[in-house]
Length: 315
Ligand SMILES: C[S@@+](CC[C@H](N)C(=O)[O-])C[C@H]1O[C@@H](n2cnc3c(N)ncnc32)[C@H](O)[C@@H]1O
Image (cartoon, rainbow, N blue to C red; front, side, top):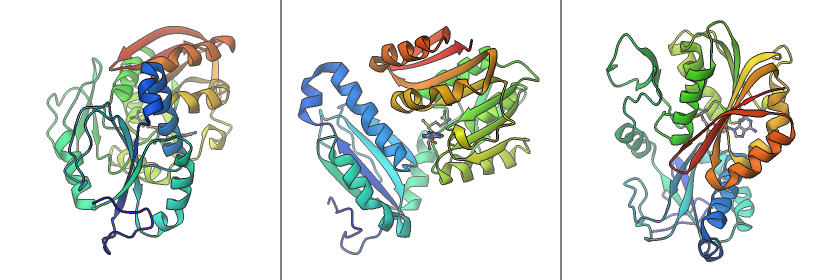
């Protein structure tokens, strides 16, 4: 049964809260462009509010085991996960208010930790998103023990290598990173891209705006004994010594990239690389134009499952 965002669900308090934004009719009827703009807008709002994970559905009927609601078929949605308890008490009104402007129906459901952990483990298996780096859950054996292995326990943070935006980025890192180079991963989530770049031989640091992601990334970095500093904040909070870098990798969203790309490119040396991902196909022309107007030149543009990632040379 749907419950209200105030934590009232028959006294059933969730360790996490799932917030589902269903696509409004106007975005559905407006065609692929309107739907993509809506998806991007909602994702950006969720991330800005501190969502720990996002899930998308493109309109096919699904039933998620850990949410006690059958979802209506034919209705795209974006679902975000937020920590429950005291944090949720403080946050739920802000979430409801910020999502009011996006139209469509909102639903709030408590989620128990055990269900969530179980869900992750069911869907996350060893993958090799590009040619060289393997992403392997900590609970599985590595399929190629001699390969470049990143072992991950994503916890509640985004980044298992199975999402198209992450997979595209790993491919671009494999093509771009040279041993001994200095790279920065912005929006590190579980730390997956920072660890992949380190396995490829780079000196790496990372940053994420979300404290849960920072904890997850630090845990994963420590498990590899990798010398990767992980800061909390945006690129503006990264120490100024991290400049003239060979590359910055940023798997964010179109809107966040449009707001942040100058700060990202400023950290890169002349002829270094800015790698961007998390851009829905329909938003790429707009993002590509903004970066192009700033003098950045695309050297590779990759597509997968409706998502675009690009490598750009910094002037
Ligand atoms: C799509 S996830 C990417 C995670 C991981 N890098 C990957 O590729 O799978 C985006 C991450 O960026 C973080 N984030 C959102 N806005 C940010 C910003 N302005 N600066 C830094 N991190 C941000 C979110 O907390 C989230 O962990």
